[in-house]
Image: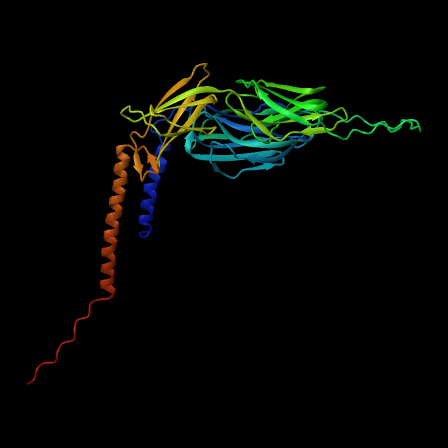
Length: 418
């Protein structure tokens, strides 16, 4: 046990630094909730679609989430869980299949607001009916060991058959020597000139051309797994699909592909492309504690990863930012600083002031932790104990060595008899 004391003291020193920011002196909790986005959609039989599992902390910091869900295996195949874009970087054991899904994730830096936990991917097995994906018992949003979750909202998804059916070829038509059978059309339309125009806060128009009359479908979503669909069954060469409604949110990147099938059912599909809905304009001014503007500071906004550098006035501007709270990461050399802004719905540019690198202790320019005086005193006390222990350990070793190996007295000289 004595030999382990230095290691225990070092662990205590690290624990003070890591645990203190997670232990406020008083807590007042608002209700947090889990929900699925989109909460409803129509999916083609055989198609895959993605559903985001999102966390709304209700204004209270959260550092761990467990989401337990159920789904009907008769109508849905579970394909996987993706953590791309999750606000919770630490992954605990997660699993899915057989009608149930468990997602557990955490973070060292507590998050606040509406955040992505993970993305689920399903495949539609049927061509009609409804499937409900629901949160089940054991789900939790945790703040320092306390469950702040007060509600949840699942999703209901409907199914349909394929968008077009090939026209059957009449094989009973008589063939005479004076006529030639009409060849069966096996050539798909050629898609060209794909454009996204008029992207709005909650809308976008996608258009393209085909070299023969064909119908039009757009599959789209917040990831390249897509999952949502909009279509028009009429046959034409100029295709237009208008996307709008609750499935589009401001300042968000969407992925999509277009599909057109001719009268014979031959379908052509484009590669996956992307567009971003219109968002809100913001301006961030970075200054030091004395109010002096800081130029050359790299500013990155999460989520979205928009990045720019402050000008000589300490100002950086961003366009098409989504609603809600965003983390702001400031970098100058090897030093970093974190802040948070809350973007509102506004027609004018929103301005934010950030005072950087103030009231913090810098540990070798890598880790910056805000520590009150009594924590600094505790750290220094631990260091002093370590120094004293090392000195005493040295003296103890010396005493043990002298005990086990006493010094040998030189042999006495024989008496002089002369």
